[in-house]
Image (cartoon, rainbow, N blue to C red):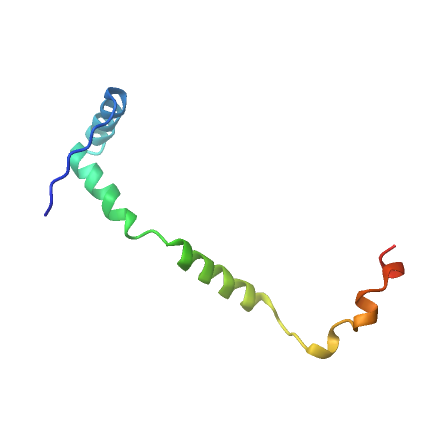
Length: 80
């Protein structure tokens, strides 16, 4: 296990001590728990993969034949 030294403003330390006391633990244990939780968070890549899977799962049915033809897609009168 590695030791680290962190410098925080006095007010931050006081709030951490109060929170640790409310949980019947130490400031070191709070920091250890917080840092350990960082490894459990979803990475940006994992979040994007999950969102992509959700979007793909929401697409019920797609057929190339149901798309607009080129002239229909570029018909400016249809947009007015």
